[in-house]
Amino acid sequence: MSTCPYCAEALPAEAERCPSCGEDLRGPGPGQVRAGRGPGLVIGLIVLALLGAPCALGLLAALLMPALMQAKDKANRTKCGNELRQLGLASLQYADDERRFPHVRGLGELDGDVETGDGSRVARTLLWAGYLDATEPYVCPSSFDLAAPLAGDPRAFGWAGAVKRSTSVSPIADELDDPPTDLNGELSYGWQRRSLTANARSTTPWAADKARRDPMNLRAVGNHEDGTNVVTADCAVMWRPAGAEGPLASTDPADPQAGFLGVVEPGP
Image (cartoon, rainbow, N blue to C red):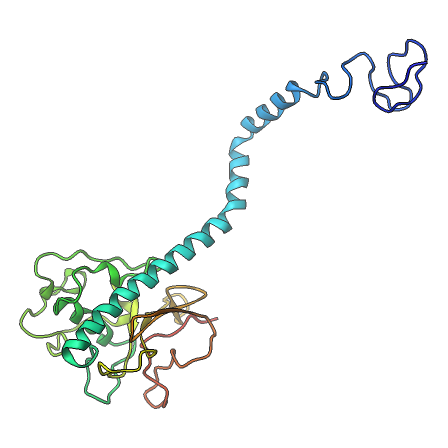
């Protein structure tokens, strides 16, 4: 008496189908390509995939999108840190020559917060004085800001090219109107509001992702949703997660801890 090659149960003589497992005994044995389960099945799956390609691609894109966005955010955050390091190096060179970091108002006074043009004037000073030769480092890749290319003399740089800036007087003293820091579409960073000397403590924050007023809900929002890049006086860049303790967000002159940066962190 023979046995079923699929379930090893005894088979009646000349049986065409196993009474135990129901397998067709007229086809190839186990491990071989069987009718209806080999190339035909594969071809059928390929045809179905091709016929449903738009839906399949849409589903695949939906599954991959979070991972792709996370990778893009991480890359932008890294590039943002590199931009801040360039600004920190330019500011440190300025401080070595001028004995203090760029600052608009008098010694001991706070520069204005993000709703004033003081931060924009500090940025324009680095260009005017020749410590930077490009506008790209002022723009965070995670923001909606766009760098305007320099045309001609950087000392005559004007935001959006709308105003001819003085080439003979420093932006610190020229008293020309600069756009508020949070509304400046060519500047993604806020600055230290206190006057720092060239021998400032190395860990003192100098510049960071700025805040802007969101016209939809009138709250301040930053360049990144989950934190802030900060560059210190010695040009070290650190990532500060949203909600971390510290006085970076204080812009109230009456606050004894105010003035560390002209930025406001992302709101809830």
